[in-house]
Image 1 (cartoon, rainbow, N blue to C red):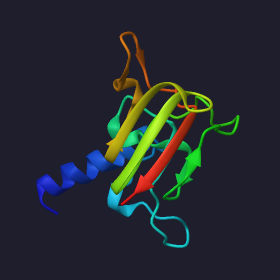
Image 2 (image 1 turned 135 degrees about the vertical axis):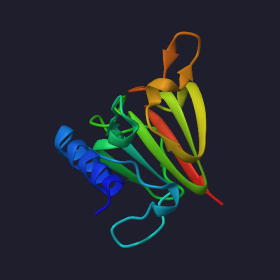
Image 3 (image 1 turned 60 degrees about the horizontal axis):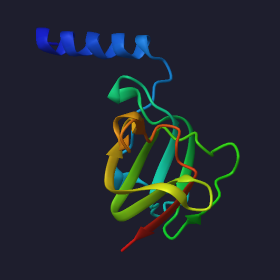
Length: 136
């Protein structure tokens, strides 16, 4: 092994020790359910100050065409990271019944919803209460 390869291997080993069980967001094109069917999006309960450890905790897979005006109690105001598949769009609302503030997310990864502004003083971390996801 070259010195550069040794340094890279040591850095990876240290990162693994620093965050056992850390998560990493999937690529938008890789969103599929356990049967290999394309998903519209995936919502995650946890985020992290470190991008490579976001998309952790519980996962809510969202098939294309899913319309959820009322999220289940254990998911209401609990989403901290999300990934939207290519050619898909996730529309979210801050209040149940598709009320309150709204935001559209196109294909891509949102590592930390706390970085997405909602109005003047708020953000979207732990603020999603309803959503609709569609793909073309």
